[in-house]
Amino acid sequence: MTNQIEKQNPASLPYSVYSADWLRKAEADAARDSGLSLFTLMQRAAAAAFQLARSKFPHATEWLVLCGHGNNGGDGYEVARLAKLAGLNVTVLAVDSEKPLPAEAEQARSAWIASGGQIGAIASPWPENSALIVDALMGTGLASAPREPLAGYIKAINQYSAPVISLDLPSGLAAETGAAAGEVVRAALTMTFIALKPGLLTGQARDYVGELHCDALGLQSWLSGHRPLLQRLDARRLPEWLHPRRPCSHKGEHGHLLLVGGDIGYAGAIRMASESALRAGAGMVRVLTHKQHIGPLLTARPELMVQELTEESIKAGLEWASAVVIGPGLGQNEWGKSAFKLLSASDKPALWDADALNMLAKAPEKRQNRVLTPHPGEAARLLDCSVKDIESDRLLSLHRLVQRYGGVVVLKGAGTLIGSQEGQIALADVGNAGMASGGMGDILSGIIGGLLAQKLSFYNAACAGTVVHGTAADIIAQRQGTRGMLATDLLHWIAPTVNPDLKK
Image (cartoon, rainbow, N blue to C red):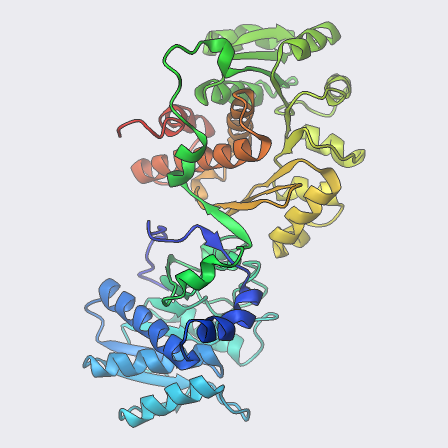
C-alpha cells in the first residue's frame, strides 16, 4: 500500500507492556473495578481511534470500515458511527458469521444501524474511492495464521491505495509475540487500547504496526495495581542509569575493560568494540589481539592499549581488568579456542558475543557473571533450534536462553529483548533498519562492556547499552536515512548519548 506513515513512537507511549492474553481475560474485571461497562470502554476506544484518524488524515472524507465478528468489529461499528456523525461518507463492510456477536459489539452494531448506517458484506465489491481504511477485523484474539476468507481480505487491504488505521492490533499479527504466520495488515497507524502488548513492539511488528499510539481508556489507575510483563525502554530512560560524573573523578574510577578478539581478517571487529567502549566512558581499554593488528589499531585509535594475545597477556589482563569482552572477531580456530578456554574460567564480569557464543553453544554451561548478546542465528545455535523457532516467539526464546545459560541475555533484533535470571524483562524500543549491516553487534558489545567496566549492574548495563546503541543509530537515521548506515557511523554519537544531561 502507499502513503504509509513512517513509524515514530510518540513520546506519550507508556513504559509498561502487558500480556495480551492477560489483558483479554482481565478487561471485564478492569471495567467492573472502575465502575464502567464494557460498552463504555468500547465507546472510549472508538473515540480515541476516531480522533487519531481525523488528526492524521484530516482531508480523508471517504472511509471504509471493515468489521470482524468480535469486539474488534464492535470498535469498528462505533468508529463508523462517530465518522458518520462528523459528516464523513462511511462504508461499513462486515464478515458474515452464524454465531452471535458479543453483547457489547452487538450494541455497537445496533447503534450504527440506528444512526442510519448500512452494513454490506465484506465479500462484495469494495468502493474504489475510499481515502482511509479502518481495520477492525481481528484485534488481539488471533491464535494462528488467518484462514480464508480473512486472509484474502487482509491481502486486499494491503493492495488498496488508501492508508490503514488498525484498531488495537493490525489484523493477522500475533498480539503476544509479534509473529506474522500468514497475511498481516500493513497499517499506517495502530491505535491500541488499555495497554501496550508485546506483539506491537517485537517480532515482525515493525513491518506492520506503523505509527503506534496507545489510549488507556481511563484505566491507568487500575493498571498500576498489576505487574506488567515487561518494560519498554527508550532514550528518555537513560538518566536512570547514566548519572553525571563527580567533577574530581579520575580514569581509574571508570573501569578497566579488557577486550579479546580479532583473529586474522577480523581486526575490524575488535577495533569497533574497543573504540565504542571508550566512547561509552570506560576509563581504560586494553585489547589483546594478533601481533600484526597492534600497529593499525594504535594508529586508528591511540587511546587504546593494544598487546599481542598470549597466555601471559591474558593472565595479566584478567588481573588488571574490572570487566571483560570476549568474542568480537575471535574466530573458532585454535588461536581463538585457546584464548576462550582461559578467559571462560575467569569470574570477572564479562560480555560474551559472536564466536564466544558459538563456542558456548558447543559446551553449554550456566553462570551469573556475564551478559550474552546473541542475534537470532546465534540464539538458535545456543538453543539447538531453528531461527524460525526463535523469531516465532522471541519472549519464550529469551526465557529459555536465560534459564539455560544464566546471567543476563540480550536477544538482538527489531525490538531487542533483555532478560535476567531474576525475572526482569525489558524491550528496547529504539533502532532502525539501517542497523542491518556488519559490525553493529561489535559496537553494542563495546558499549555494554564499557558500562560494565563502569560498575553498572549486568542488567542495567545491558539495558542502557542497548538503548544507547539504538538511539545513536536513530540520530543517524534522522540525519541521513537508513540505507548506507555503517557501524562506525555510530561512534560519533555514542558519547552524546551516554551523557543524557548534556544540553542538546
